[in-house]
Amino acid sequence: MTKATQIVADFMTNMKQGKHAEARRLLADDLRFEGPFDRFERADDYLKALGKLAGIVDHVELKCLVGNEEHACAVYDLVTRTPIGNSAVAEWFQVKAGKIVGIRAHFDARPFAAMFGK
Image 1: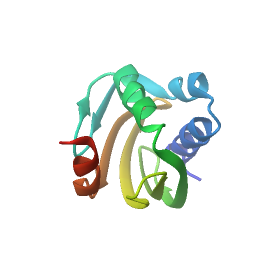
Image 2 (image 1 turned 180 degrees about the vertical axis):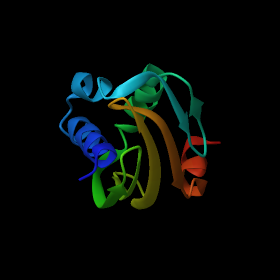
Image 3 (image 1 turned 90 degrees about the vertical axis):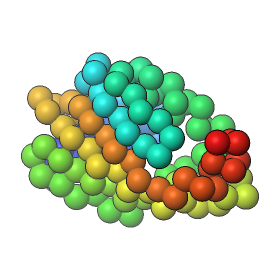
């Protein structure tokens, strides 16, 4: 694994295992997140949004994780406890100085928009 893929893998593993403090240590304070619904410029805001999803997410099935020293791309199925079922997600991560500094999430937001009234 490359440096970036290892950091992203560690982040995802910590989140999966409920080790939120360990996961948080892998995020830069000024993390920039962009997704179909939200944009954040603080790691704590991003984690708060992930916490809101916890109620509908059963688990994440990682399909692929590739990258180099400063970038990683994770492709996974977000398996939900809703009629939506599985949602294919691709996330691009930027890593600097051992921390995730940027995340861009790509997925079909239409089923979630209908569910959340957006």
